[in-house]
Length: 445
Image (tube, rainbow, N blue to C red; front, side):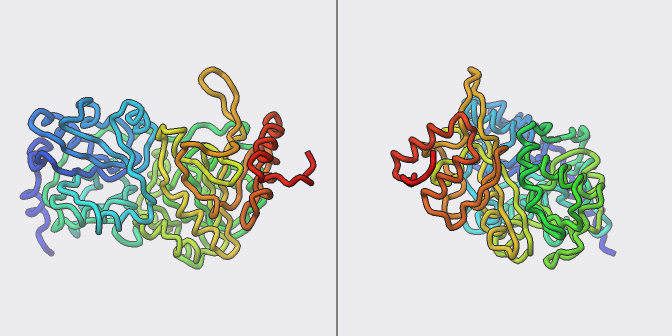
């Protein structure tokens, strides 16, 4: 057997020594979610006054991110995110984070063909006897970035679960330049907000569309998780998992005996995910579980792969929809709140699946800071970023029902969307539709 321990000792560095390789002008990547290199981030921030114009990329990272917090001038560090966590959203509000428009299935291609990484810093689980470090719940994005990077630094975190993978779930010590060890706080339980009454009503409308043997993708937020909880209490059986983000909703389905993956023809008997965020119990479930496989997002989110999964059901949320069927899911006006992520990937793939369905969900209204109520179904967007184009939108759901927009004309779309708008706004929306000539004169008011 090769002596990996000797190589390990040769590459072992303190966080301070490891980040000494970063130069002014470099692009540094922190990968995603629990892959955030906490010790290295802290050490790099301490080098602030020695560096100029270092650009850092991350994704769905919980705070704090020291390089962003330590330099409001952004003369030394500038932080970027491909998909904003609630923490990164607050950084955007402060002008300390810049969003990178992207779709997740192209993640690997962006790095292979268009982006340069001078230094990647990524947290991994401890090395095994074969010389491999596991990317854990960060498998969805980590490997393509490390392959592109000039210098690879791994930060060993004993709290990260080792996960089984389809491919690219590990990196070998021979591909690593430096190794960093240190103490890490246990990960906090990152659970979605408790479902609202509207979330539960929306979930009740969706559950009847889910058949035995369906494979589920549940997006981020309280509403998709409400769907998972309701399914766990339903009579549906033999469900599968194929999702970019694995959350506690899937654990609830598994504990209820609903998640078996028995009917899957793609990755049979395997629950597939890219990244995972949730509770300690979730991470324990994922640890060395041969019934679950982590894959890069270039596979998990590839529409052609998703389309091959029979009865694929995608459930995501959004901010607003206009009467033309356009969906805004990542901004409120010009304010960045999340990202495109995998919504468009799964919308495309699930729509093409035999028996597949793609749901985009929202409450019909929201209240602003002044307590004023506004409709989430709008006449027409004006300046909002469009996440999903009207030509690809399938089911839209609110607490007032579910409508299918596939193949529907402009007047049919407006009619159907108004039917699931809050009753207080329906007359106003009809007038707006009439002005835009997308309301039939023969329609009943």
